Length: 435
Image (cartoon, rainbow, N blue to C red; front, top):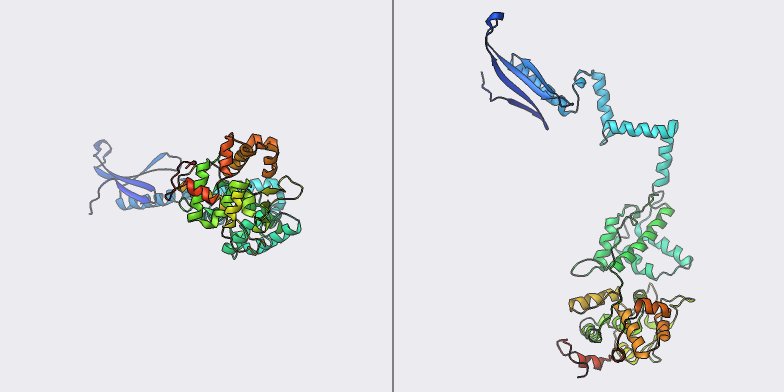
């Protein structure tokens, strides 16, 4: 007879049943001879320890195997006595419930039946029909329809045109109903992210997210995507934007930045000049066209401004700005918008990246704050400065103006190419302005 190491473990999945061997001494009073006993031990579904005793090891093993299979299959002690019909019924219930535990499925059905009564199936079909996509459209087709609808409604399209055509160009063939929030987030970071961190500027990311939300909600209303409370664009998490405290560039740092951009990033020179010398908002700079710049008269009409608002204005170009702009490289005409832009895509964000890499302090919204602060100091005329900035005097004082000396104001607007050459040496190191 084969010898076994006891206890013998019979394992099915994570379930273990043990077989123990014990020797019973002879009981002469009851006329019982000495014998070997095999005990099968397990814990039932309620955690109670159960033991059965056998004189034959083969019988003990068979019983242990059956118990282990029953426990591993989730059957209680009572289930072991189920009929074949009961077992077949339970098996079919598990198949229909799929990944949902059968008890949970029955509870869910019971609650739904309570709410809908005999109309449960009809109600489920109506809910499904109302929420699923009823039409098919690719991302490009949805964008085309959305842009057409917005133009007909007279909506300003500049911000939409900055994002949506590019999205259509890269993932336009995908059905819009299949695009998920993670895809949109990754696309924004990859296209507009910093080269080192591969993370988009928070303002850029959040603006793109807003445009996607508008597109996805319109597509939901048109039946291109499921009718849910939140679309995939809504599920994109906005990025946290830093505090908008008033921060300005020093005259020296602006001179160094102009020199750096002129030498290494000439395509961004025009937007750098206008950012510092005109005080246009970030969105206005990105939408500004060369067609609205009159260098002979030293005037700039804000392209992105809407009539009837304070943003609809003319901005005077100082002689330094005119001299810089006269030597700037002009980009090719944007056939979609019908303009020749002064700024490459997200030019102001790139300027801040250039400044950080050169270890130049460049606060958030620093160009506009700097223009207002230095312009007020140079002219002493807050009303004129606020008009050029497209704000009221009260807003200028509250949100934009930093105290600077009058001579620093004059020095800021005197930063011609020749003046910048005097301020920076060949290595870009700042030397005295007076030199």
